[in-house]
Length: 329
Ligand code: BT5
View 1: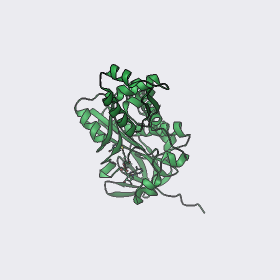
View 2: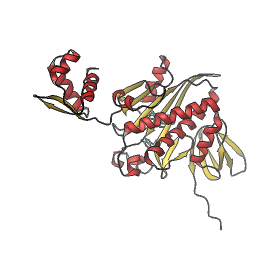
View 3: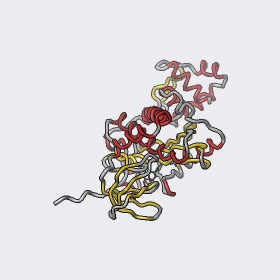
């Protein structure tokens, strides 16, 4: 708390100096204690000039996702107004789940600089190095039946792709059900988890991981050829704060659209970005391998596949590999 209070004072006086004496008077702590906190703030990336004569001056703030840094940028009405921030956490989704069980409200978010056990689907891992990407979980409490929960994955995909487009000008592709690709490499992944009874959702955790400033050399060998980051595709770093702010805005807009107008607008936006119709595809679902042509997604977000045997199959969960179209001779 003292750190935040010092930052508030320095920001208010920026670009000028504020004396140690003045800070100590206002916060009712000793000047030695302030010097200790300033050293701590410097270690977390704040550039603070210190002079025995004139005091302290904030020169530059780091690209941290703390409430102190993010809140002044937010333009949302309710999404992300309460931020649970962690330097490191096992998984933001697990943390958000616990918070939701304890009564956390719709729109509260969990962000972390790094995850020790970042999770993908089906027990897979999400590579989560520190201070370069976004690891976000959003708590939602929609009043819709559990069957519609998959639509929230499509909604989150549309919002994430929208935020990437707004910030970079690039055109991301959505790959069913939960990948966002740039030039065929994965730049973001979604893991939505639901807590419900048969006909009522208690809460949904939207888990979103976006590779922002991650360098290729940070990646393990197995995903190096599959993954990318915005920095890699744009040739320059992006502001993580600005990205989070844009993503929260997109999520608020699309979620409100979903609650008001239901599936149609979400499906339309999703189809525009996913372009799956007519693509030869192999789908692995619950250990079964299906080959055929992707047709569409239905109103509950399931993939419709026409198998090579000509049968229409509805796939609710799984992984898709699109195959190259055979040349017509
Ligand atoms: C996903 O699973 O794509 C869901 C990823 C969700 C991550 C977020 S971060 C915030 C929140 N908290 C969590 O603990 N999780 C969520 P899936 O479709 O199963 O893809 C996992 C696969 O993607 C792995 O097996 C790797 O092949 C690949 N992968 C792992 N880390 C990656 C990364 N950082 N970038 C791109 N690909 C990655």
